[in-house]
Length: 248
Image (spheres, rainbow, N blue to C red):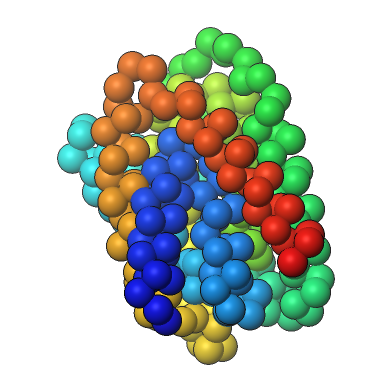
């Protein structure tokens, strides 16, 4: 790894960590970057989880210090997500590199289109245990399955379930999201480690930047308006990456 590659990992990590906490799409930057730096797709997929775990830990710690208190409900939602993530990681290790790259391009394009859709203004309310129906748990299993397989754009799915379905305030959605992602990514990372699909040097440098980005994002998330401009920054970079993947 060169000095330039190391700096690129830290820099992209900052941007990705910031985006992942406030919106979605950070892995649409980091996963292709790891592949562009020469890591095979499956190794890049596993290595990316190091950054996700540490940036989520940073965000959860910062949210708790800022007064967030949703641990019990988040853990309830995380249980089916963990089961799904184990299955998703197992499946990811069994697809070919060519198929994985095709899925990555399709997912990035689909996520970009979903991000362009206007966010409806909903009357939100606090989440309670009584509102956690079997449909919600099934949705969490599906999110965990997807996250265990590829992770890219998983935040969009959280917005669909937690904001549109359960009508939780978007700032609180981000709190639930990072804690659930932390819990379900740990066992998925364990599977990639067990199969030798993690490059720790790359992963830790990426994590260094993403933890800083996550910490900055928590400060913005707790502000009244948040960072709506993040979506447009993400979309611009996504388009450039898709073109790079298609015409590499």
